[in-house]
Length: 118
Length: 118
DNA sequence: CGGCATCCACATGGATACTG
DNA sequence: CAGTATCCATGTGGATGCCG
Image 1 (cartoon, rainbow over the protein chains, first blue to last red):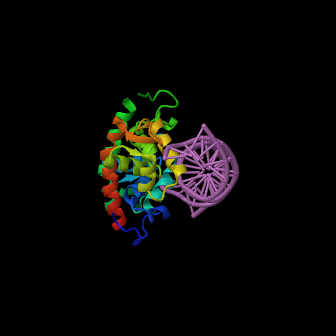
Image 2 (image 1 turned 135 degrees about the horizontal axis):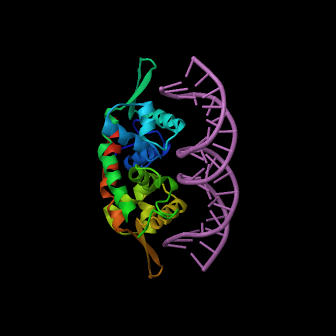
Image 3 (image 1 turned 90 degrees about the vertical axis):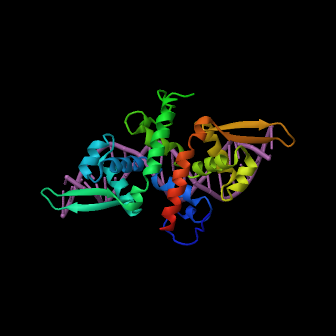
């Protein structure tokens, strides 16, 4: 187990005082409603614009997409790039850490599929 | 088992109306604070009693442990068995579906460790 | 276009006290 | 021992509307 007394990068206070921080921290970072979907889309399609994401995830509102992306950017899982065109676009891509989530997302996807079928 | 057609089904209504349900549903089921830790412990140690779990996860209160276990049992990820001894014990073990979470938990653990170090 | 500001509803986390 | 019952604080999801 690692000592969580060092870097305070994990977002939440409760990541700092127990040895199960790693799995708990991951749950806290991507365990929210839209986060894993967004990462999943970016993993599959590469960089996507705001509208593209909004279209792909049909049931999300622009407010929630914006909130989620802001959060993911804060946690350094997603990069935000402003493209100067007319009209301008904003493109989102995964950071290295975000890309490293692939095994997690894949496993979640596979398990969820099985669970829903049962 | 369980069908996602009932409103109880996958736990949340939003699991029913989009195609990203699998990954989102998984996030909803184990994305809570203590759930992944509990599953992790049960994966590593096999069946554990309430006290054993409470001791292993030092920072959890018995209230939260009870709530989390109840939820996990409801979702059919954990089995609850009452052992008639004196004093009696209650033993928790993973269901088949719960055991199937191993790749997810492992991936979360590995990723979280890397994230915390960065 | 890609947001942000509000406001609200509900889910979740948690401390404390009590019980069969 | 293994919970339940309260009560409360905070987190999260989401609809609506404005804005550069």
